[in-house]
Length: 133
Image (cartoon, helix red, strand yellow):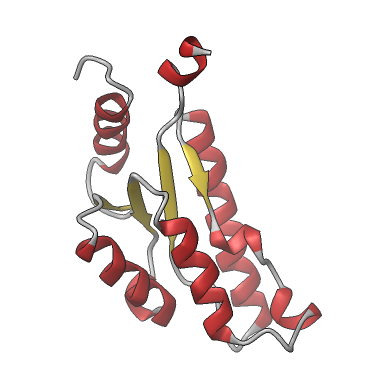
């Protein structure tokens, strides 16, 4: 059991645009977040991607209000050790709420479009895992 805990992956929250009046753009937002989720798994992280958690629920369950989705997202954000913000996050109401939460909680934020994003993520992952940095 100790070996499992020692090798646990750090938890990272993926934030970025989801909603868009154009269903194709909304679907592209979900696909982009999914692709980054896969990259993070390969890189040794345990990502949580809200885009995948409730993908297209707004069509299947139109009775669920927007505020409920934000509440679900923030419940998972509390577990995160880091947040990765995707391109377009500045235009997303949900991402602005998430960013405010992460800043208040003093949880590290990394931006996917910034230089050396992946090397910063690797350095942080190693630190969180207790590996030499």
